[in-house]
Amino acid sequence: MKYDMKSMKAEEFINDEEILATVAYAQEHKDDIELIDNIIEKAKLRKGLSHREASVLLACDNEEKIKEIYDLAEQIKKDFYGNRIVLFAPLYLSNYCVNGCLYCPYHMKNKHIPRKKLSQEEVAKEVIALQDMGHKRLAIEAGEDPVNNPIEYILECINTIYSIKHKNGAIRRVNVNIAATTVENYRKLRDAGIGTYILFQETYHKKNYEILHPTGPKHDYDYHTEAMDRAMEGGIDDVGIGVLFGLDNYQYEFAGLLMHAEHLEAVHGVGPHTISVPRVKKADDIDPNEFDNSLSDEMFCKIAACIRIAVPYTGMIISTRETPQVREKIIRLGVSQISGGSRTSVGGYAEEERPHDTEQFDVSDNRTLDEVVNWLMRAGYIPSFCTACYREGRTGDRFMSLCKSGQIQNCCHPNALMTLKEFLIDYATEDTRKLGEEMIEKEIGNIPKEKVREIVRERLVKIEQGDRDFRF
Image (tube, rainbow, N blue to C red):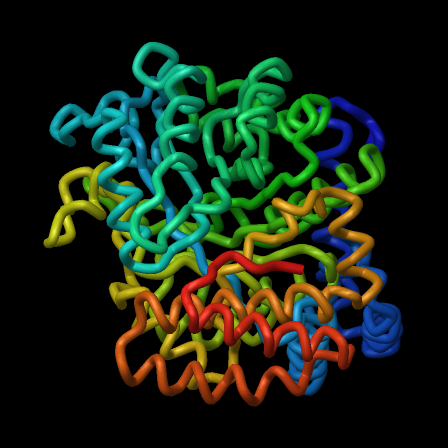
């Protein structure tokens, strides 16, 4: 197989020989300061880096250069996304699954985990619980099971989620993280009004992928890896990729991840809307120590920084798999979205106490959404519940052109402030509300256009008076 980023065949756009050559090249040149300086200078242009260039930066262990990489990643994130952090929550619909994935407790052979699938009434209860927390954006999750979780069930759940209006609550964007499917089903998801379609590759190493997925439809590496192309063909132009770090060599996964982004940009004219960086975590019958590719917190942070430099326009996601300490470190290096108040069990939000028997993985950050919002503001970030771009049709290449031009500051920044104001009035504790009001007053001054600043001030007053859902 020959490497070809424009090929529609998985083994050609994610080419094993090219990845191995990239990793070897990076190791060979990790101490070449002149080359590293040239790559950093190229990265400063905010046009991104190739997988090979970024791999050299990842391999570099010169402390002075690593600091330059971290500082640049932080600055690029500010240039494209400002100091906003978008908040979301996962919603687990069903843990029925026919696959045999070795790293997930939902695998078919796990006979002692209770299997559960939410009815539409239970979906509604979950949504109300999430709305009562203050969430506006969800990522729905379900195991792969054509009998228990067919596409019709997923579509019905999406319809239910969007239909629930409770007090001042509303879920305004539903992202979907379900198994690879057909072009026809992707069209159905698009027509249902989803936001981003998310699918983690788990690992780009084909041989190990097949070992880790011994049974079930997910065993088909090519079908899984080519899913985003089918999603794009089905009209979904916001897609999110990611790998599960710890399953394979991180240098290999890093190069494969960037090659996937390059492929999407080359073929479809738009790269991934988001890139996620989850790590293998403990869960039911899963011990992460069984996988010998775990990586340190420091390397995890370095990977995030290098992704931000290489793919400057993408949203980067970190979940509650990580501890508050790791999230605090990594968030400044390029992360633009985080989950908050998450429960990874089926039906977990409607329960007062967090249930553990159906969790997909252990949650390491157990803070409430209010506590996460409070923490973000104390760290200088604007917690954003904005969903405007999707609802205004700014998806795919339209969002990317907005992001790359820097005009995002005149829409996303004010939208973040207005959605934060809603949260403060409807859901926040007194301390969080006080912090938030101070932040909003300060951050209005950072909106570039005076006319936009005036409109925001007028709308903030209207929000105080009971109006909701303003957006640019």
